[in-house]
Amino acid sequence: MKKSFPLLLLPWFVLPLILIWWGWPQPTVPGERIQVEASSTEVRYDLRTRAEEAARQEFLRTMDPALGDVPRERLLLAYQELQRRAQNSQRAAIPNLVWRHRGPANVGGRTRALIVDANDGTGKTVWAAGVSGGLWKTTDITAIEPVWQEVDDFFANLAITCMVQDPANPLIMYFGTGEGFYNSDAVRGDGIWKTTDG
Image (cartoon, rainbow, N blue to C red):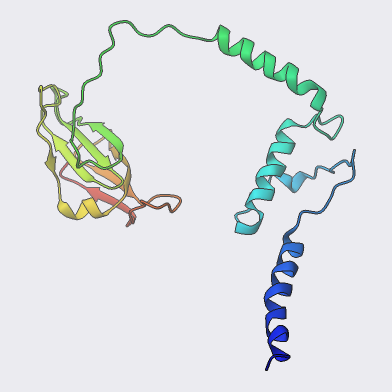
């Protein structure tokens, strides 16, 4: 048993070394040029190559096409030019601009869509939709404390990400559900929804 114990431990040491060697980046030759192909703009979503594709995209974005390489000696000049442009493009703040909380408070989720209802000639009715808070409506957005009504508690379980009102018939409204990429606080979607009594 004592003689076979080291043999049992051997795979636990060899396997990690093989995995590290397999994933270790390959050295590049100094001055090596990368041939840019027409298909290099193709987007891939393979999890293993996302980091490589991001690095390649950054390389292609910053390289000089005539050289086929990133001219590192020009990086400082480019940085200084960006700083100069940023200073010249500073805009003055809008005077007397005051923001007020309009709601819905602590229930609207991450609000993604707002519509000022075209059916209301006063322009006071507003619809708000959130990716984790549902669909809400207020009939007087100009009130000091607007009263928001949840349209349906089922919608709170859908990620409403966009909303539109038909310009030819404002009683027809659509909202789209679902988030493009999953994240830790993502809420499910269920396609496009339509109402004809907006």
